[in-house]
Length: 99
Image 1 (spheres, helix red, strand yellow):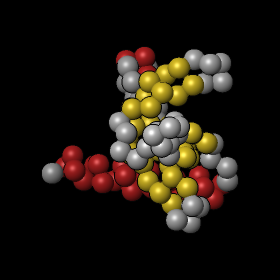
Image 2: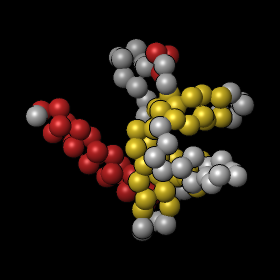
Image 3: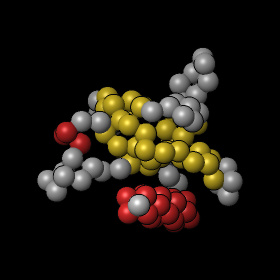
């Protein structure tokens, strides 16, 4: 995976592959990592309320010889920063929808 990609394939703990669409990526200077927000592609990705579950992971961008790698979020401080980024993103989306 690289910055600017639109889709990634995520492999779960059971070895199942799921095509996901990338919502957005960002870098954190504080943590020295890149992060990606993504969600599964397809109707089955929606819950009973019609909402799509969004996932977030840290990632190491790939290069031409190697695929990128998703990493778990490791600390509560990272989660707090990610939540702040998510809230800002959602607020900006609402502003755009209101225009």
